[in-house]
Length: 149
Image 1: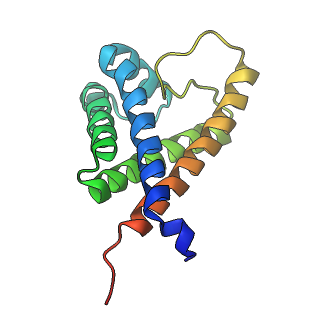
Image 2: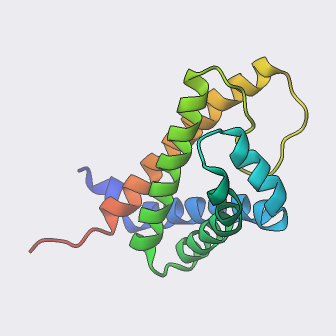
């Protein structure tokens, strides 16, 4: 891997960007668990009994990971969790996009009213954004991997 990709300054910037993103994504969800439960339900991928616990736990996990990345503590663990969350979010979006089922991602809270076409277009951009964030996670994991001597 190129040395500049593992540079500590780049890793710091990436870590702060990821941390801030997940912190900002968590706050509106923490403030509105019923709204998050509705959003998760719209994906039609989660069984009803899991819905409310998921709406209560997920934003706190996002917040914890965001704070850990910002603070520089448990960086690899937080990056692994963020990567797992991003993979799950991307998969859920891709499934709904493939089925042409327009949904609001719920990433940063509730979205305003939009047409079906606008929501499908937004879903494509959100999927691309999540894949870009996964590249940032990969950078943090590569830069913080234990070195072989």
